[in-house]
Each structure stands twice: as C-alpha cells, then as structure tokens.
Amino acid sequence: MYNKFLFFLFLVLLLQSGSASAKVTPEESAQLGGQQLTPMGAERAGNADSTIPAWTGGITSTPAGYKPGKHHLDPYHDDTIIFTITSQNLDDYAEHLTEGQKALFKTYPDTWKMNVYPTRRSASYPELVYEAVKTNAVNAEVIMEGKGGVKNSVIAQPFPIPKSGIEVVWNHLLRWRGVYVTRSNGLAAVTFRGFYKVVISEEEIAFPYAFHRVTSIKKKYPNILFAIKEKIIEPASLSGTGSLVFEFINQTLEQRKSWVYRPAFKRVFRDPYLAYDRMSALSEGLATVDDFDIYNGSPDRYEWKLLGKREVYIPYNAYKLHGDNLAYSDILKKGHINPDLARYELHRVWVVEGTLKKGEKHIYSRRVFFVDEDTWQIAVADTYDKDGSLWRVIEAHALNYYEVPCPWTTLVVYHDLKVRRYLATGLDNRRNTYHFTEKGNVRQFNPNALNYYVR
Image 1 (cartoon, rainbow, N blue to C red):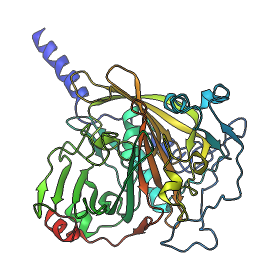
Image 2 (cartoon, rainbow, N blue to C red):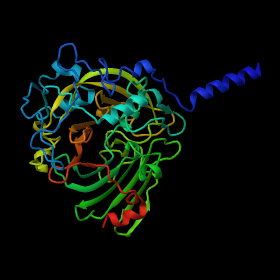
Image 3 (cartoon, rainbow, N blue to C red):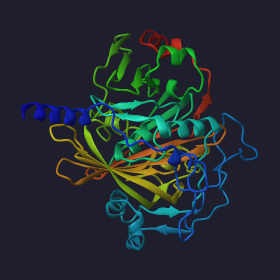
C-alpha cells in the first residue's frame, strides 16, 4: 500500500512539473494557411454580419510614395468613421468593449470617445515567420517548472492553435518583431491637470530568437529572446543615463539580467530586480515593469485561464497617431490622448485571465488580456488591484510596419483610473521611427559597451 502511494505521488509530481502542453496534431497544423485558418492561426473567414472581413493576406506592398526609414504613410487614409462611441450611447456597444474601456467613458464622460472605422485585417509577416509558426505548432512546449519558458520553438509565435491561457501569453511574449531594430522612444507621464515632460530615449533591440539563420548573436546567446539597450537624451537632467536588459526564452535556465549606467558615478551597475511589479523609474508610479509592452517577463506568478474569443473594438492601424506632422501637444491631452487621432476597429481577440497564485506577491490580483488573433499581440489589458477593483487600463495602438512587414505598436497608453492620470510611451512623431535591419553587432550588447553607448 505504501509503495502504491509513493508511485501515485510520483505521478502527480511528474504531471505538475516539466513541460505541459497539449500538442497540436499534424492534422490540426495542416489547417494553418488553409481555408479555415490563416498562417498565424486566426480564423480566415469574416464574422456572420460582415463587420469583420476575411483575412486576405494583410498588407503585402508599401503605399506609393513611402520611403524606407520615414514615418509610415496611412494606406487607409480614405477610410471614414463609421460611428463614434460616447458616454451617451455606450450601452449600445457595451458587448464589444472591455470593462476597462467602459470605465474610461465613465471616468471621462465629457471628453472620451472612440471613433470606429472599417475593420482592416492588415496584419502580415514574412514567409519565414509563417513557416516557423507551422513548425512550432507541432513541436513547441510550455515549460512549467521554475520561472517557466518555452522549448522547441523557433523564430516566432509558438502556439498558433492554443490549448491554454499560458500558451496565448507566450505567443505575445515570443511574437516576431523583426531581427534588429533601432528606434526613438518618447515617454510622457501626464498629470491630472494635463501637464507633462517628454523623456526621449534612443533604443537598439536585437532578437536572437527571431534570427532565421545562425549568426554570431545566436551562437553566443542561444537562450536570449531579446537584448535591449537604451540611452536617455532628453531632458538634460536625465541625459546620459543608460540601461541594458537581456530577456530569456527558458527563464528556468536563466532569468532576466539588467544593468544601468549612472552618469553621476560614470560607471555601470547591475540592476538585480528589474521585473514584476517594481515601478518603472520614469513612469511616476503609473506602470509596473511588467506592464511595458502591455506584458513582459516571466508569467509564473499567475494562473492563466483561456476564456475563449470575443469581438472587441481595439486600437488598430494607428497611422494617424504615428504621423510625423504631429507635435506631442497634439496627442497628449488632459485625462487621455486626443481621441480624434485614435482609430478603433472591430476584431476577434483571445481573452486570457491571469489570477495571482496563492502565496505570490504582486500589486495586481488579476489581469485580463485581449489578444489580437491576427498578431498575438495584446491589444487591451484590464488590471485589478488587491481588492479586486478595476485599477488600470492599457491600450496598444498598433500598425503594420509594412516594409518588413511586421505588426507592432506605435503608441501604448497606460490609464490609472484611481489617480486619473496616464502614461504614454512610444512617441516618435518628431524623431526617428522604427528602423528594421538584420545587421546587429553582438559586441555592442554587453555591460562594458554600455559605457560607450551612452556617451
């Protein structure tokens, strides 16, 4: 009897540790890129009432007049607003809004609105991404032990036909965002009265995981998802501050590593805890470290539940917000960004709920993610405080960087409903937009090189 009990206990422990993933069958994988599913696993067909069209390949060419390296021309500039959601007609559209979005109308009843445009399923990726996703579908597995991770996955989203909430979260974390990217990033923490200072930084990001061939970076860092270095150039009081972060795919093997350069000391320091609910130094308490990119880092502190799909009005094709003709003051208004510059469309999203595990610590007890089915990027996040009350709402205004092509954000807005303030990141209107290349220098991503990068 005792031996039977030990055997049973061994089985339970075996099931609770290691890899846990309901693998996709070859038959299911064969549907990717077929008549029912897109190469990324989204439903190819539109919805029943034709308010969501079928996916026909997304943006496959650059608009006439676009020059690489410049801000992106709006391929849908002729689209007109179908209708506008306000606090007065909110109930008519509530079924297609998140709880956080509805709270924004109640918080700013006289000024907040959502202009809804025709749905354009603009998402597209290089063929190598589609091939990788199909390979990942039958090979990738979630690692549940320790900090967690993914194994047997390459280049892009690992779980195009998800069976669990944790798989959808990893799709967001491992989604393809190019190979090597440089960009300017403006950040503004807007006060209750609408005042702000914009912090400008320059960033370089290398994605070894996304490399489709063996390179020096991939050889040296086989487990790194991305390496990002940043230097602040404005305002003068912060100029010269820099940082370097390594993020890993299998976080049980290696956990995030980060360093910061402080000009007052003229040296690099190791930053041992840049993760979870630590407040970002520049957010003025409006966002946690793991809020950035709407969610990042190890998902190990939450139980993730897949709630299915919904049709939701989400920010999309935000070419107007991305325009180089805008000043920061055109975008940043009291209470929220200028709603006339935002574009919302009806899209199908995967809904994932994260509930804080018993014994774990975080300022958010619950997070609900609304993940775009065409890109696996979180479009909207509703977060709740320790008492279970809605606290913060995050929206990612995304577009397709069609010269690659690569769907990604141009502006992310973090609303704090309690203090009636917001944080805007990704402001690049008067500076360099995203530049995508495959030429990254592995020697530039190390703590010693950070000294020279920030000067």
